[in-house]
Amino acid sequence: MTARVINIPNATASVTRTNINDALASLGSTNSGATEPPGSLNNMLWYDTATHILKLKAEVGSDWISIGYFDQSTDTFRIFDDTQLVDASGTATDGVLGDQTTGTWEAGTGTTESLVSPAKVLAAIEANVEGITHTSGSAPYYGVRAWNGQGQTGNCTISGSIVTFTTAMPHANYAVTCNAAGSYGNAYAQSKTVNGFQFIAVSSGGSPYASMGEFIVVC
Image (tube, rainbow, N blue to C red; front, side, top):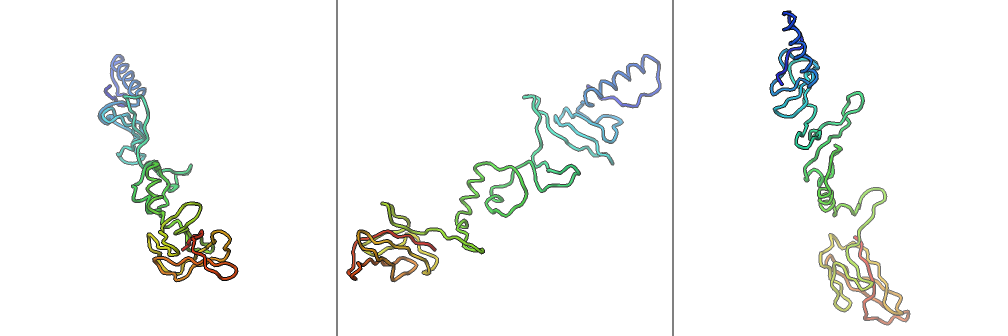
């Protein structure tokens, strides 16, 4: 459809009727056309058939504001990526209807609310897993770095009473909680280094016990 001007000029009755019908048809079709409507007014709506975008002419000036995209192949309305969210007064709420880069999610420091895919959530968790130990603050907690017990061994190898870490500790001031195997109730770690320690278990009478018991290493 060819968009017509809204202002109807003086003409003969038949021409005026045609102009009025054309102008009403333009209004009824949201001024549809591949080019800007002639004699467009501020705050006028225009459906741009060249791009399938509904536009509103700015309140001041000649710019057109894009409102949304109409997918004519599926008869659906599409919101533009990175559409900013605002409250009822038009004030930005620090959110967008759009995505952000994987690197932004991995950094974990952004405050802009936006869409996120499950893959980016997983990438952010994996990128920050080392920081999840939370070893700072008023009530820090510390992650288990190595263990042995219940038939499972983690981040270490055991040879007799010697425990060697698969991945070295950041320092030798780690804590080891030990339980002796069998009836031997006294167990402790000695000769601690960043690479491992010696597991010691003794009976109540002071006799050494060679079998490895359970332990966990917290750092």
